[in-house]
Length: 283
Image (cartoon, rainbow, N blue to C red; front, top):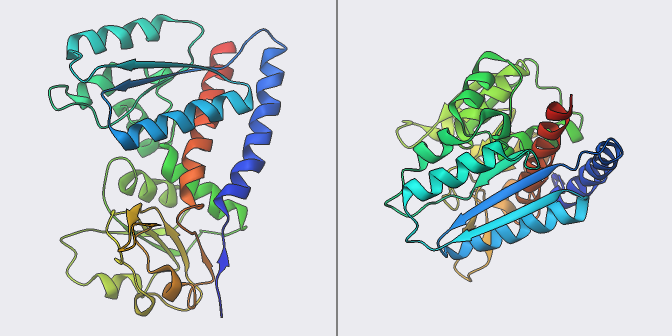
């Protein structure tokens, strides 16, 4: 048995085509969805991510503004820029690229973003909306994972889902989204006593710890669905995830690759959130 690969690139193209059509419909009403991306410093990975986000906006017809600042920018100056963007009617989504320089409190900056423009889904108001099942913006990476499960027609009701990782960006919101779909959810982390005992029970596993080889073929039951959120480098310097892809592919029913899996979906869901912010503002 060899698992079916859930192609994040193909699904992203499909969803971005739908986004582009909805953008054109909004433009016909005189509204162009706008995303502001703020980059502080010259973190190499951040520069790549930001470039990809801006290009994705351009490709789907969204208006994007990229603001680049030196790493020496003060916290007060950054907060002032966020406040100005909150008031700008042409901007519907604000994304401050993380990580920020050490002298800037990332939590304070995220909380300064208007919840109506929090397209990253990191604001406490967004987290509270997800927690209570109210409308809000879902964090893009777990949102993308949910779309991938939806794309294969997977019914989560009554299934056992195991999330490896408890970050505020992926692990915790992922667990809440799965719970909303009536899965029984277990969250595992660095203090979990027997990870293998947990994952062997799982119908769905989401690996999101940023640690290569955390999930191997002997840790999953036949037919499980495996979503790999990790982004690491192997000994040859090539991108790889948290999952031993070659081994797990022989046991799972579906699996996401790295690269080309969850990664493209993260940016796509950012576009979806920005579009939805613009639609809400126009209504």
